[in-house]
Amino acid sequence: MIQNIAVAGAGISGMSTAYILQQKGYSVTIFAKAFSPSITSNKAAAFWFPYHVRNDQRGIEWCNTSYEYYKEFMSTPEAGISMHQLLKVLRKDIEEEEPVWKQFLPPGSFSEVPDSKLPKGMAKIYDVQVPLIETQLFLPWLSHQLQEKGVQLIEQELPYFDDLSAKYDLVVNCTALGSRHLCEDDTIIPVRGQVALLAPGPALPIYLDNEKPLYVVPRKDAIIVGGTFEPNEIAEVTEPHRIEQILHNAYEIFPQLKQQAMLGSWAGLRPHRPDVRLEAEPGKNIVHNYGHGGSGFTLAFGCAESVGRLVDEWQ
Ligand SMILES: Cc1cc2nc3c(=O)[nH]c(=O)nc-3n(C[C@H](O)[C@H](O)[C@H](O)COP(=O)(O)OP(=O)(O)OC[C@H]3O[C@@H](n4cnc5c(N)ncnc54)[C@H](O)[C@@H]3O)c2cc1C
Image (cartoon, rainbow, N blue to C red):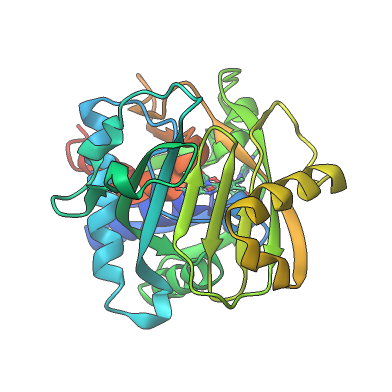
């Protein structure tokens, strides 16, 4: 019988998994090399959007479930989550597939800007209501919730899973890029994202142009302006010429941003994998939940529920 569970990793994947498992009545301990704010999850923008999520039933359910969780968390202001307008643009000169991600949204939260109202050069604009997750508020809040409910947080770098596997009934692996070594999985790679931070102020929608790529995310502490998509870049540093280009792209769309002081910049490494690995490892007491790429927040609570079901059904 499963009672004591070790979760490896304290990013959004590990913390959401611990949250669901604790709710189900399991005794949970999180082991991690680093905690918020020193993890990739703190570098996310972070709004709900299925970015490079495989369009299968599993992906749809994960995104829908997470959307519902964030809506529920919104009733607690300290959690730092709000519903926000997102404009997803499609330029005329760019071929892009139909927005299959429509299926990931609850009814009534999606519409298209009429052709007559499209600015020059735009083929389509999708107008969507999405949760905006302020990582600087949500991650400490979630960590606090876990600790209040008895989840233990232990700082430890794991060279392998054997010791945890022997000591706990089950191990859930949420180590993202750490799984490259821990699972000898070469299919997970870092994809660097660089962003600039501008002083908060003007009321703006979230703006997303995946092709450029450009996104503008108005948080309470800063307007996050991104970004880049740089496979296999492992240095978590920003480059001045990239940041300049990102800001140039943003000023073209929102000239008013030129008035906002620049507060800084950061880079984060997305744990990109062709698809999320969420499965039990045959013959071992390990469940994997890693490889969420640029959609870790969008998928987190849906994936955590899937882990919960696997654990409940464990023989
Ligand atoms: C610039 C940028 C913008 C983004 N914007 C969005 C967005 O708008 N929406 C969205 O949904 N997603 C976004 N993402 C993606 C999102 O940030 C990631 O998918 C998500 O943070 C991954 O979470 P995770 O918990 O799997 O990994 P991480 O946050 O990387 O956590 C991994 C954990 O595992 C631990 N660990 C690793 N190896 C070991 C080891 N050997 N021993 C012990 N512990 C270990 C780490 O210390 C850490 O605690 C963005 C990412 C970037 C970089």
